[in-house]
Length: 146
Image (tube, rainbow, N blue to C red; front, top):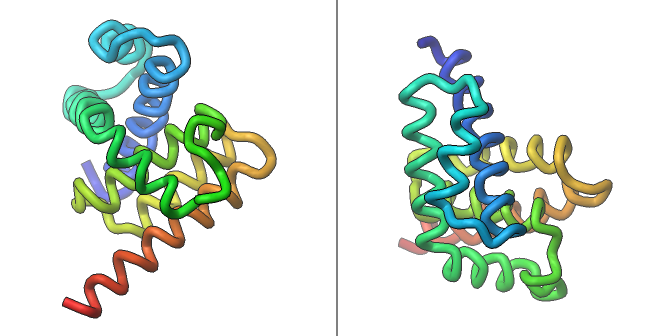
């Protein structure tokens, strides 16, 4: 698969991941119940399905830490009061930026903004971009001081 095909597969994976984590967060269903149900309805290849499963498991495992990051970078917005879509998009992107580290920060931000554009409310795109821009600025300052 070429770079373009890989990018498209990852974009589809993030959409499926958003669906999975949205369902878990909004319905109270478990990840074990939700993941197979969503993946059965997608046309993702095996490698991309594994990517979704791994990311979903990791985002859920680090949810409390990710929510603390969201709160630090958006103190005026209590995490529990954010829309489920915005909260989920931020969790995914911050996980990719700070913990997974195999996705360049700019790519994680661009993908998150695209998800917000398609699935969020009118202000979601700007809000997500602002929060993630602050996270990236903090990451860049950490690299400079090390």
